[in-house]
Amino acid sequence: DQQVKQNSPSLSVQEGRISILNCDYTNSMFDYFLWYKKYPAEGPTFLISISSIKDKNEDGRFTVFLNKSAKHLSLHIVPSQPGDSAVYFCAAGSGAGSYQLTFGKGTKLSVIP
Amino acid sequence: ETGVTQSPTHLIKTRGQQVTLRCSSQSGHNTVSWYQQALGQGPQFIFQYYREEENGRGNFPPRFSGLQFPNYSSELNVNALELDDSALYLCASRRQGPYEQYFGPGTRLTVT
Picture 1 (cartoon, chains in turn brown, green):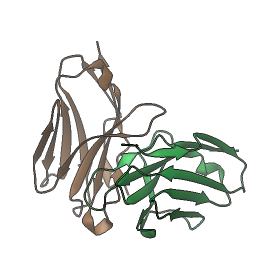
Picture 2 (cartoon, chains in turn purple, yellow):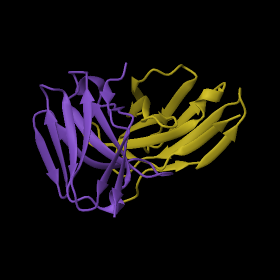
Picture 3 (cartoon, chains in turn yellow, green):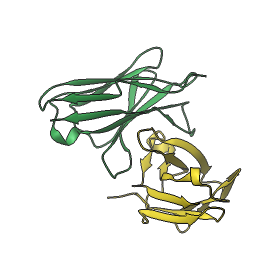
Picture 4 (tube, chains in turn brown, red):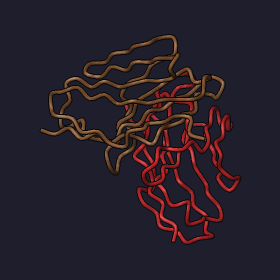
């Protein structure tokens, strides 16, 4: 039972354009959502998070949108840069679960120069 | 500020053996979690420690066990290793509550 789903295994975007990565979840108890970036042979790097009381959070080139009714969140990267090429993981947690994280399978983003 | 560190980087073990992986938390973090990441998958939660007590466990058998020490460092122990235990093992630390977790570089375990 996959509670966090990233349905696109890969995404290619031209440098300078917008990258949109999507994530769906099924557990309505989740109240905290995060995006991580992972390069090969490294641990995941935290990018941005959002609480369920918000619908948008912005940090520089990264914006996360949360649609609770649709149980959907997305990460927008504008403008995309070649250094953004990595695997992106969506993760979710809840206070009821002591904020242990459930991860999606990841989306590999390739930014083409 | 020192980040999360893990040792060893790589490890090769034989089926049936036991292994201990180590993690040092980031300064100021009192909660540590362990994850297993198989090839092509997202990290899967194993268990979490807060104040030296396990306060959350994923769907892993009892042969996966852990410890947290007073300085918030942690160990993951796996007994009776199986081939399917081959994976990247990630440690993450954070402050207690809805705060972002910071991951170490991982330990690559290969079971032959």
